[in-house]
Length: 112
Image (cartoon, rainbow, N blue to C red):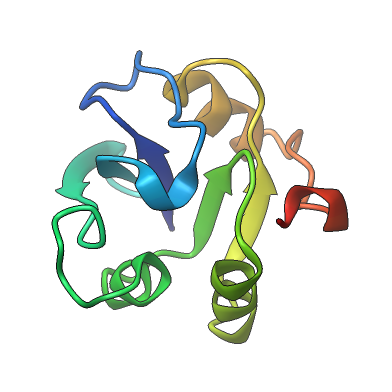
């Protein structure tokens, strides 16, 4: 399983970026290999690919973030990519909470 998290850093100990679409990078954690890779956010780099399309192309199964815009939320939903509500902890702690089933789905109030 691949989990995507928005970040302005490049380490598991970094915080999640508050704004999904404006994050500098996406950290993609592979639960099977227990490793991760960092990918620059194509939208921030001026490319014409939306983050949901980019992450789908990388085979992401789950996105953990604080909130999403309606367009991104609906694209993830149509791609059958789960969206989970991040907590104010670092990336590694959010991954651990997800793996324990302790993160909630993004709710209506998280979409704006």
